[in-house]
Image (cartoon, rainbow, N blue to C red; front, side):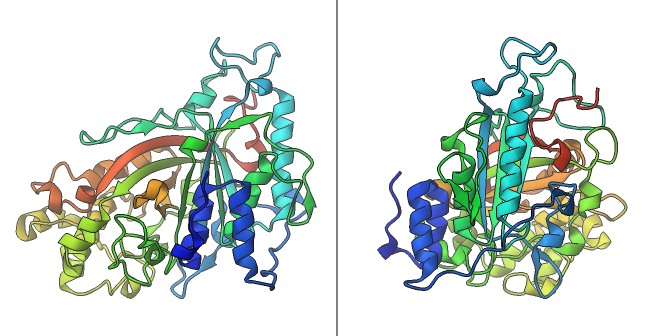
Length: 442
């Protein structure tokens, strides 16, 4: 794939574009940029030889991520979602391994190879935003290959369209690898090392790789970014206007992931059955009509649609959400007044609607989504963790606001988002992350 033209891009935009391209040439170019001439970049912290020192949950990221001045978790700057299908060479032939004629369960050798490759990443890079954090999740299609079914404690249905106005493609491959780091070169190098294109990572020799276990779907690879200043550096991309605020961490111009309006990692963790300690993950990939969002609406209108009319009237948000500190500011009164907002103001806020799905005042989802310009179009990879996919569906139904008498243009932010992919995944606990069976303890 052709590398981007460095002369036409800022440094930030260039390295973002390199992560999106992927591959060895992109990694080499990224390392050239991060070296800043003759100077070596800051060293990447090394990982550990002691797997017991790592968290039992794959999704244990919060403790190992940075936080802003208000205590909100800051996701790593750079992300890659790598879709995978089980390679034919990884299929097992033991009695009971295969559930049908179309998909065969993985072999024990393939499972051991997968675990060895992932452990190499953990030796090479510190489990942190400054090193590398990652998850490996599995689709319902992956588990269909087994004779046994997933336990009742795991709510993992096949993905489906969730509104009448969407017609998404579904993630029906086997697995999704999510790589995240503040260092773009680490994201690129980790992917290259896992798939046989490097002999070492951060000074650690690679014992094995995943080339005989998984096939990559390069045409479905997704990338993105989050962090103050990163969205504004993408104004060279068609559809990303110059009016994106300089300090905004997301393309739509506002902060997200407020600590007090996010579920905790405990809340989203499966608490029973063989996959206790894991979680489920939903990924929606969507385009954003960003030029209309910034060109048609003023700041007051954008605040009304993203948060609530009260937020706008009382000037609660600030330029990019900085006035909100560690909460979205949606109160119980704000939740209850969604119908009043639609009737009196002709607009209802996205956060106002989503908050209706809270249980005892607590949100059920832990969001780890990030902005993207994949395909040279502004968008969002909406990534949510929850105990069961049914909880995501319930929140999504609240966000739709189908019961509100309001035009689509003023129904939160629905008018600006177009979902093109959906996928559901099980993120097993670390002990079961390497090609788990549907009923691992049976």
